[in-house]
Length: 378
Image 1: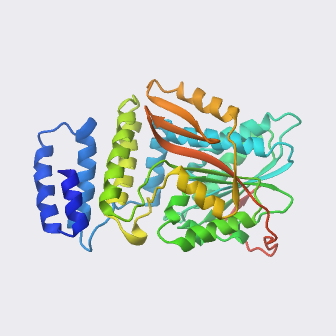
Image 2 (image 1 turned 90 degrees about the vertical axis):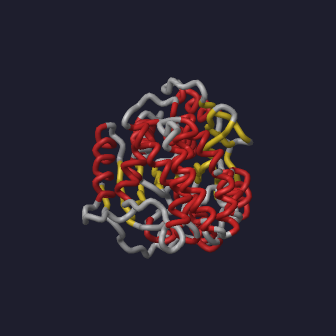
Image 3 (image 1 turned 180 degrees about the vertical axis):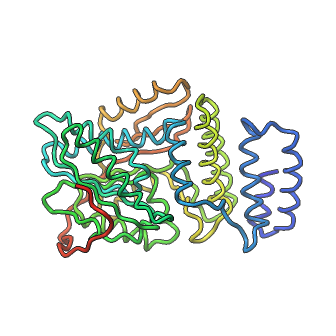
C-alpha cells in the first residue's frame, strides 16, 4: 500500500493517494507501531500525509535548530553511527597533523562540540608534545540571543587547558553552509588545515551552484585533509517513487539497528531524529528538501572533479572503528573497507560512509584582509 501510494503521488493523483493514506492509518491501529515494520510504516505514512495534505503541497516536521541539536545528541548516544563518524574522522585528522606545530580544524557542523574532546586528548598525548590547535566551529545562530557557539568553545578551551593543549576557538554563525565565505574562517597559510564535514555536504545538492562553490573555497584553503561522512544512500533521485523506495529500505534497516539498542530515552529520541529525516526526504521538494543523500561512488566522482584526491583511511582507523562497536551489545553492526574508505552498516547493508581527501594545490590564496565574525576564545 505504501508503494502504491507513492506511485499515486508521483503521477499527481493526490486524491487517490489521500484515500490510501486514510486506509493505511486505519490499518495502523491493528499493528504494533512500537517496533519493526509497524514503526517504519507509521513514519512513512506520516511523511506521505504531510506531503499530500499539507497546505502548499508538502512540508516537513517543524522544529528549531535547538531541537535538532538535542535530537542529534540523543542519536549520537543511542547508536554507533555518529561515534563512528567522529572517531574515523579524528584518526584521519590526527595522522594528517603529524609533524605540524600549528593546526586548524574547520568543523562544518559543531553540534555541541561532541567530536572534539577526543581529538584534543589525542593531540595532548602526541610524542614530542601537542601542537597549537585552532578550531573554527560553524553552526546556526542562537534564536534566544545567546552565543551558544562561544559557550561550546569555552567548554572545549577548559578541557584543552586541563591537558596542556594551546587552544583557540572561533564560532561562525550561519543558517546555511553556502552562506559561509572563506575569509570568515581566518585561515593562516602557516597552519595545517583540516576541514571536517559530518553529514553536511548533501544539504547543498538542491542545485549545482552551492556544492561547487563550497568545494571550490574548501580547495582554496589548501587543506591537508578534508574528512567527509555521508549516508550511504541514494535519496536524491529525481523520480519520487525511486527516492521513496530507496528511503523505505534504507530507514527500515536503520530502525532495525536501533531496535537492538537498549538505551532509553536516547533510543526514542534518536527515532524522532530519524523520523524528521524521513519526513524531509519524502514530504519536501525544492530548497526545503535538505536530506539529499547520495552514495559514496557519486561523492568520489564529485570530489574528484572538484580537485580532490582520496586519502586512504588506514588500519588504525579501521581498528578504532571496530573497537567502537564492542561498546554496543548488538552483533549486527559491521565495519567494512571500501577502496580506502570505511563504511558502517547493519548486517549486509552499509548505512554511512567515511572518506578522507587531499586538495590538489591551486594558486589562489585566501585573502589576509578578514573581518571578525563570531566570538574568539583564547
